[in-house]
Length: 358
Image (cartoon, rainbow, N blue to C red; front, side):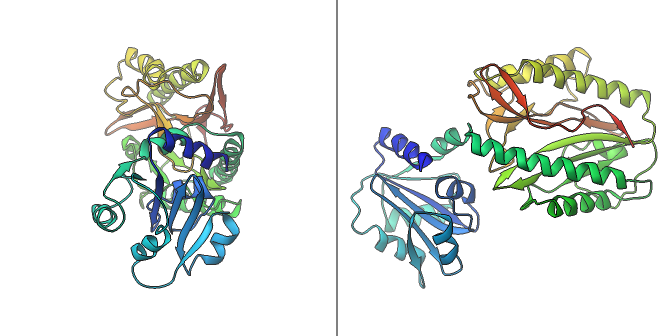
C-alpha cells in the first residue's frame, strides 16, 4: 500500500488523474508486481486516488484474488480494451499515465482512440521509485543471493576436465531450482578458455580444458527479486598472465566497494574502478559500465556508468562488476551485489572473490 500511496503522490504532482499499468504477456510484469503484488503474466492495473482495479482473464482470477487487494474486474471474452473502457466508464479523468517504454505502438494507438487522447509517460516515475529498495525488498535480494551462492559452491565441486559449458550451466540452474529459486534471473553465462573474453557469451558444447579460466555469470530469483553474480575461476593452475589480470580487476573492484556510498553519482562510482584499470593500460579492454541497479529486473535503474551524473539513492541496490577482456586470450570479470548506504556500501554477496583454482 505504501508503494501505491507514493505512486499516487507523484501522479498528483504531474496532474495525472489515472494510471494504467498494462501487462500483456509479461510486458510490465515487474511494475504490476511492484504496485499490486500480482505475479501473473497478463493484467491491466487501474490506479486513481480513490480506486485500485485489476483487469485479468480467467487464467488468473483466483491468483489475483489471493495476491492483491486490488478490486478484480474479470475479462471474460472479446477485446480487453472494451472491458477496460467499461471499467473506467464512471471515472473522471483528463490525463492518463501509461508506460511508453512497455507498450507497443499498436496498444498506444488503441488507447488513444478508445480511452483517452491525453496519454502521458510515467516510466521515469516507476524507475525512480524502484531504484531504491525498502528492507523487505533487500531481504528478498539477500535470499536470492544466498540460493545462488549455495548453488555455485556445489556446482564448482562437480567441474572437471571434459565437461562442457552447457553441462556447467545446466548443473548450476538445476541446483538453484533445487535450493528454492523461483526461476533463474537471466540466461546463465558460462564461457571457458578464450571464449571468456566474450562479455555476454552463451554456454556452448565446448569442453573445459585444464589450466583454463571459466567465467560464470548467473543469478536466482526469490520473492520476485534477482541476484546477479559473476565469478571467474580456473580449472587447475592459472597462468601468470591470468593471475596478473585477475589481480587488476580484483583491486579495481575492491577500491569501488570500499569507496561506494549513497549520494555519489553513478559516474563517480564507475570512475573509481575505471581509473585503476586504465592506469594499468587496459582502458579499452573494460568497455562496459561498472554496474547497474538490481531488483525485480536484473538490469534496472540506477546505472553505474560514465553516463549517469545523478546521485545514487540511499538503499539503492547495484552491482559492482569490473572486467578486462582480451580477445583471443581470455577475460576476467568479478561481480558483487551491494546496497548503498549513506555511510558506505553493504556487500550482499559473500562467496570468495579471490581467484579460485579448482
